[in-house]
Length: 296
Image (cartoon, rainbow, N blue to C red):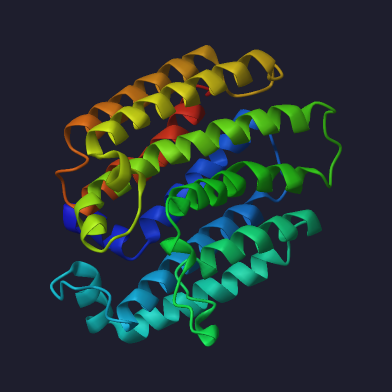
């Protein structure tokens, strides 16, 4: 069972499904009902899959995986053709579904897509500069939060603009965007905590390598509290049709507490794939909480 889950993680299918679930959760919270929501769902799934696949492939081709026994290395070594097919297939599918979206959604995607694709690439290499976006101190975690919160909140909003929308939708969307930006910071920080030793050795400046692991865990606690406060503020200002109910808020609060306990006790000790299961998987749980607490 764990081997199957790990296969989903290392082939980036797990994170792609998590992205879709987080999108659905926010569509429910905003009460966005798109007639062709499956198009946006497919676009988010394939674009996430492509970005993560191409990033991994670039690192693999450049020999940046120092441990040749890593699962991902053996996967690329054993199935090179399959990996190329999934990369090209997901990239082409992402483009096709993007062209079916609203023009404003395409603009948003162009911005966040550029950040995602260029993130691991030294675009100034022709000028003798090897620096990548990911090499700038502290920028990584905020770029990730921007891309994910934009995908999950802004894209449904821009897709809805082609239909008649309530006058206050921009205001509550901005609140939810802020809340989910903080949530992505909250679940991304443990990744940096887990990588702190490696990042220190390679001189990569992250929050844990600068503030220390202990302080970073308390920062995660503050982020979780801030996320809950913003969600409660959204709840007080959202229309009655929103799927964010008191019971939903309560269960999300429980989820935040459990994640924080894991952050304090395990985040700097467990293998990286466990971090992916817990924190990427939390986006799947987030959707299930919102969905199941609103079943009629």
